[in-house]
Length: 402
Image (cartoon, rainbow, N blue to C red; front, side, top):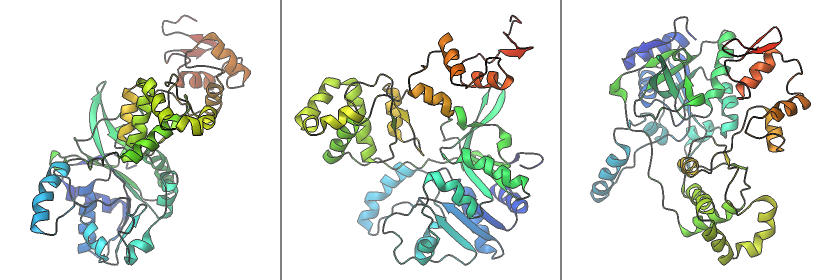
């Protein structure tokens, strides 16, 4: 991070000028769905005008507005595009990128390409990196990423200004890695562009201002979020969704993405949860129970979700919101292998009891004579209250009692 972080800007050009001054004229910037389009466009404009700037953009799903080719098509699609995409800015690099007309000092590295959209496009084909979210951190670093960017929004919480990162799952992974590179002497930067249209997400999404080196904050740069309409769910998708819902064990983990199939699986789960008799009747009438009953009994289930599901995903698809609101997405998972193993084995439950401490002690997760590390562990996972302190081998409450 910079010595006096973050630096705030209300002017886009000044922000980009400071960014280039900080990292140098070789800019390798990464950003996914939450990329700040205004920032990308200004960097692209600078690199077009100045060949000494070497710009590499690492991204995925480079968006462009649909356009009609004939007058009739335009009269039909233009009002639709305006209604759906609003003032969402275009990415200026997309048109020359699609045409294979980028100058030598600008490189686009995509981790996702629309099937068939880049046939005979040498630049796109040769710079494509086949990477899923699990490996995106590794691949971005190998590509020389020195700028991480994303949209963000702000809110005052308990008198402190906080920022909420947009939904890029890899953000929590790349920030510590960039800090490591910074400590090794690399010039790196984290830049956020405030967009008040973003929803303010809590928990791990909340970060302090000093997370960023540069923050661009001007209401003029607020814009509509990318959110194309959902395709309709057809009969085939519904069939898959019903079958998939029966293969989910209560207490299991679910990953769904965007699209009709994910919506169908969401519907199947809600039907199983709230209209269980109809859910079972549909499976029986369709022959699913007769054909696959043994598999369902072995790995899935047809009863409502009592323990609930845990969502594991690279993006917060809309289906997860519905599953949460319908009381299905409710299983808690903890980032400690030992603790989670005990929960999975039902040695302990989500309710804290004296037996919880006994099991943790038996399994070696804590010591008989608690250490400061043990207390920190127990507080992190809600076994002890945050105001408990350890002094001279005794636990003390906030009122001083031991």
